[in-house]
Amino acid sequence: MENAPATTGSQANMPTARPTTALGAMQANISQQPVVKQMLFLLAIAASIAVGGYVLLWSQTPSYQVLFANMAPAESTEVVDVLQQMNVDYKLDPSTGALLVPAGDVQTLRMKLAAEGLPRSAALGMEMLNQDQGFGTSQFIERARYQRAMEEELSRSIAELNNVRSARVHLAIPKQSVFVRDRKDPTASVVVHLYAGRTLDQSQVAAITHMVASSVPDMKNADVTIVDQRGNLLTQPERASGVAMSDTQLEYTRKVEQIYIDRIENILSPIVGMNGVRAQVVADVDFTMSEQTHESYNPDMTAVRSEQLQEEERVGNGGPFGVPGALSNQPPGGGVAPEQALPEEGADEAATTTTAPGSSRKSTTRNFELDRTISHTRMAPGNVRKLSVAVLVDERRTVDAEGNVTSVPLSESEMTRINALVMDAIGFSKARGDSLNVVNAPFMAPETVEALPEKPIWEEPWVWNLAKQVGGALVVLFLIFGVIRPAFRDMTKVPVTESDNDNLSPEEVLARSSASGEEIAKLTTGSEKMEEQLSNVRSLVQQDPALVAQVVKNWTAGDA
Image (cartoon, rainbow, N blue to C red; front, top):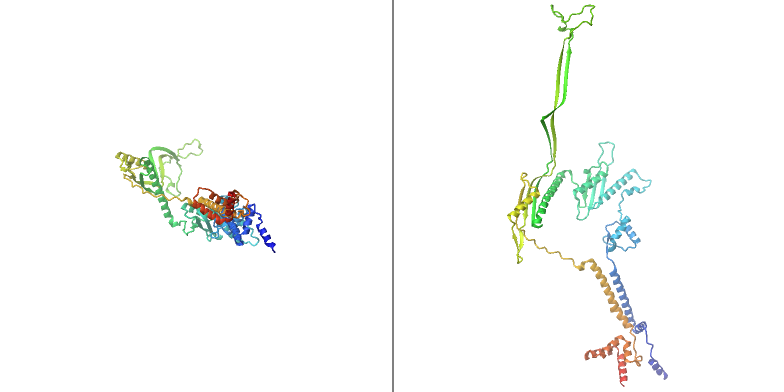
């Protein structure tokens, strides 16, 4: 019992093994702390590492852009399957259903998916005819499938236009009858969905109409109706043909007037400047279509076209002739000798000479050809009947020595030259009734328009990406050097005991702890004031009194 205290005291005075490594010092320091403090320290370290890792990953996360939007669920499934096979990160917007991919891979992925035929339309065209319907297919179903396939093919063709986003075609094809009177023409209705801010002109509407009408047998252009997504009728009815013609004429008139205006500005801009001339032209255009036929003859130029000669000779007969029973058959009167004596019996007929009565007639018919000219002239519409031109020329501006701007009117010779140039440029014709008025007047100075504010640099996407990466790096550096490193430095500090410092010199004691050595070095320097040294001594005594006591002990032992 008496030796117990001595044994205990000797054990207490025995020097303990001091850790020589930073890991051992950290373990020794942590073991000396309460359990709650140990848990808080470990949680702080883990939280710092987790936050740093999250910030680092967040800063490296790429921005996403829309790959495809407004896709059907079936199309989205096919595209997502292909992206998974390519190991491409993607996101689906829950509100719009848009497919998002990294911004840098949008164009590349679109090209790759287009090579795969994606996204393909959910509606089938002529492909549905390739599907096997089995043995339960009727003629009605086959006809309905063919009509449906034709509608989808026409919708695809119309959707190929630049201004058309999508289209739907409805065909009404009646069943043909063997009776001609009972046959009905097919009709078509087209609904086009245009892009925002785009329209279809009359030429494009006519093109769609002709395409649909030519694709269906016996369909006329008037039987095709085209409507946009707002319900506007794009096809012009028959009663609106006059209005369409008026619009065409108005457009043509504006083109003609603009041509004359360009001529005037181009000829005067080298003299008065591009902003020193204003011109307006009113053109009276004749849209009347006329045809004229003219026929003329030249009597001085004649030629025999044909000549006909008739010669007629008639020989008379001595016997009675005429209608039987008439007076011509009666014998001549008494005492009248016959004109021809009858030959005697037995006389030779060859030697008999008789003279038969007769008559002859000759006639000639000549046809002369005259010089004939026939000219057919067709007057095309669009001829300019009259021009009314007004030209305004700015005065010459001069700047004096003081910087004041003054306007000087043009001289008479200059105005005469400008007038002549304008007349030659527009083809001025007094016989046509053209009018020209050139005026020289000062133009008002244009109001200074404030420039649009430039987009701040911090609103640029690349700035936000760079700021995100720099911010993440700063947070990680702060956690490493501001939280983790000081904590590990405090925990890895080798503890210094009084028994360890008994045989150490002041220089060796200062080398044990960098923090304590720095504080003591401040005491030994004479560059600081006495008050600062005293405050440093007080703080050091409060932090590590054992170390200060040992240093003072060594100093006193050395002085002795």
